[in-house]
Image 1 (cartoon, helix red, strand yellow):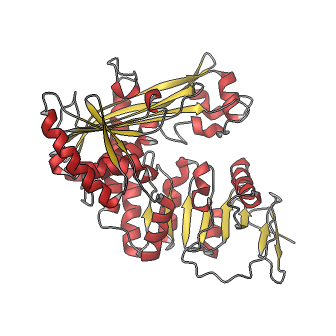
Image 2: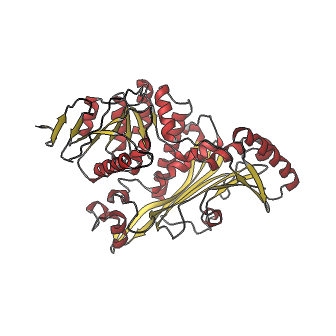
Image 3: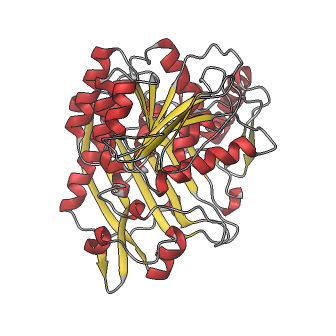
Length: 474
């Protein structure tokens, strides 16, 4: 056992025949599992400073393309311990048991240690967002592929743009997983928008009635109070987690681009114009903060957002902008507590010249995302019904069993056979190929330009919600 002169933490190395090599820091974590099997792995994963539940998203199950020994580099603290416990539970569960072998290093020099040791080829970053710009840039400079949980940037667009330039020079992948792309309701919405007999073409829209609308409603407290996921206290600091307008909005801006301009490159300098944006706070009382974080009192870094013991979290926001002259809107809302029997919800609208495509996830849909085809005002219903049959036949070629069922003045899209993929599989394939589609990187840059430009505007505009009723949150 030796003492690391830089970190000051004890590290032990065990070398045992047929057993994983495990490094133990002062966290006290150790796993001993045999690793004699030969696996032709492509991805040798490194987890850097995990602090969000998404840090485990590539380890939900064993993937033969990912080497089972995973190196973890992090500062000492509750965030890395939470990650370790999550992997331990997955390794111990009865169903779909995993067999990850963690090699954990904790110390103040964790980032330098990761770069110099280079124990893997892909770094997964999911944690405190205030550090993400540095983590991303240093990692791609060192020649690692980087899978970064959203948001990649909460203030510094220039640094992110430079990171993509470095990644291109070093021929490594820099990618932020977008799981909403792989939800069947979003996939079918995208497919139907590409059928001109049904959808026509995307309208231009207006500021008041945009052609593209995305909205999400989230809750800090989910499920029974004793079972809710614990959120770190820094999650409620916009300087560390990011304002809502640059956090969850990332998914929504991505969907507007992905749905409307599939496989097309978006140039933020010419194709994006942010017209207006605003943000407003969700208010938390001390007892509510304690219940969600398990932290007894507000940390000092939150004092700037506290008045009369009430914490204001600027997690809500709205962006009005254009993509290639198409008027678009994204809205994100956070409430404190999820009402009994309800859920987080997603809303999506694409306005076509012949039909509108709308996803709702409210009580009527039993909180399951459901896609509808709706005629625009004054549309010929008989003509639309004929095009519905054409669209159904085309969808069934790719998704057997898919049906469009008329319900009053709209059609509900019932998904058929579908083999779900996810962003972890996509990330593995990008790394395996050593590249992404040509549109992916510029469109990520355009996405973060949109959210960060919106944040600038929101800080200048009033921090109050819209008074107009929002259909997407009814």
